[in-house]
Amino acid sequence: MVLDPDGTVVGKVDVGKDNEAHAVALAPDLHLAFTSNGGGSSVSVFDPRTLNVVRVVKITGRDTDDIMYEPFTKRVFTFNGGKGNDATAIDPLKGVVVGQVPLGGKPETAQTDGHGHIFVNIEDKSELSEIDAQTLKIMHTWPLAPCKNPSGQAIDIAHSLLIIGCHNGLMEFWDYANGKVAGTVPIGKGVDFNRFDPGTGLAFASCGDGTITVAHQDAPDKFSVVQTVETMKGARTMALDTENHNIYSVTSEFGPPASGDAAKPPSLADLEAGNIYDDDLQPLRRP
Image (cartoon, rainbow, N blue to C red; front, side, top):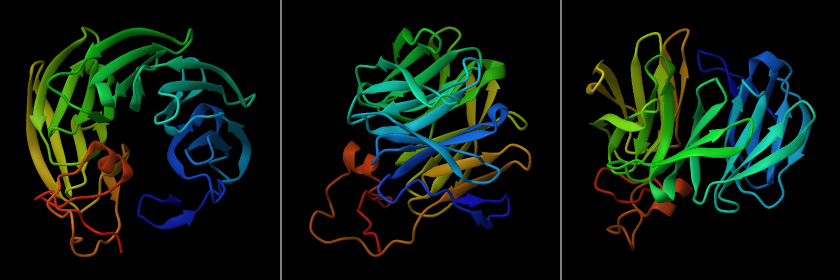
């Protein structure tokens, strides 16, 4: 689904009813965009001007999840959890797979510094891996403690910081130039996305408990929460428009708590599957 900055639906991209589109990446310099299709183990390449799919790239035996465009190599990368535990590199102009990067764990979200280095969260190991986008080799792997089960990720290139959302209620600022934690701030429950606005210097974490935490770097090793924005239950995904400085989140309306295992805390699998919980970790039934 495609919306304008005012929230009006202006079109849609048909990736096939069985393809379960998970994420979208844009390549403005190529005038192309991409969806990762977990159900179809594929990537749809489409023209963002016409919204027509121009080709589909099959990635056999992979559960494609996050996707990104790396401008230095002009390659598209999918991050494959469940099946594969690796990353797939694609030549988007030729529509072919050029290689795989074994990651040894479940990749979640990734960012690039624009110079051929990719940083990807390894969620089940609470680690961060740095990939050379040209050679498809892992350059470094670091433990992210105190962060546990990293999910969302954004990047502040000017200060060499990754902004990482952690399922143990932290937003961690990782100094990727020196390979160390620069600081943390508390956030809500069920984080999934992080964004950074270079125009305002603000970092964001959207959480399934219906909050977006807004944070700021006050000094190289000091970070603070500027505001906690109330959204809606389940609004854990987020986009940022750096021109109007608006953030956008999406969710569904939910029914009352389900009976049965209402007191059971959520597992990581529940959070990954999109099962949303209230502030007391009670499951909310989808309509």
